[in-house]
Image (cartoon, rainbow, N blue to C red; front, side):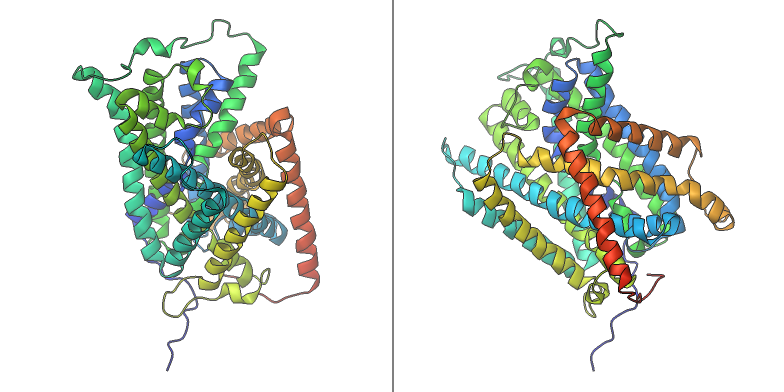
Length: 484
């Protein structure tokens, strides 16, 4: 006799794996690539590093507020649940809609393309070839294969997928620490290096004219670029229904994860500036900043190692998305807003198996659809940069609303929150700062030429989601389990 499927996802994740998911979902491509965009926006190294710290502290504010919300509703689906409970089913559905297409399908496709680019660079360096080693269509096949492998891994066990995240996250953190220490070791031991690290490369550190109105515009543009390297911090909330002792471990994972990320990101950018002046960093095109730093400090072998580190990091980021992404689909299905099959739990693996497979195969289809489109309609703006703008704006609106839900719940669930072992420190200032700054940044994206098109398309996509919600609700489908 077959074992019946469980009614809810089992709580199998402890604080270490939860923290690994926070860090692993955040560290992807951004910390290795976005230094170029930051240097274009602010040519002063001091302002560039300050932007990384400011966005990190802003993200910490959001995480501290969301940790309270997630402690109140430690259920599968994360922001879907928070938005539904705070503002109604429409906004919950809109998160699921935007998350599926932007945060998961589109961004996983973008990440897989970067993974294959890095793999191609590694092979070129290892084989000492100048020509491309992997052709266009083989690249798409490898990108699809990476998504398939990681999707199936997550489908076959939450703890298995989280364990993979822990292993890859350890490598990611180790590679960033190595980048941080490399210039220090070269300087401290007076080692030979193709390019000696030099503090003079930090110049100019600060602007000469603090009243220049372009300064604020450039700093805001740098913040927008850095939002992508920090993007994914809220992913762990989606898997809150599988975390043991969530009222303790969710705040712990968010707090420890964000402090680690801010520290790593700030220090690694110091290393970047020791090797490359901002004026030269801004001119990098195909080579990621981290790989160029390794090349300058170590030589061709360093470029090989840097490219390999980026490849592993991106592979892990795809895995993190494939692990947490299906939980919103699962929650939508249990609320009757998606096909009921997606709300099922596999009897053996105890995962949202159908939702994971759907996300996996739709992402593969998206990879090939974008490949055909890029061949038919070439663009000067890279697919990666376009998708990251979509993700930051499209998801940023609803993610900010999820953080703002803390104000609703402090009134609506006053007694329950009073009993929680964790409450957001500095309330209401901490969540208010996050909401205010994010609103300003998103507004800046909407009115800035370089990101306006993506922002308007994002708004249009959200509006389309509202239309889909209207069609679904007119069918009056009954939810499987409103409590998830």
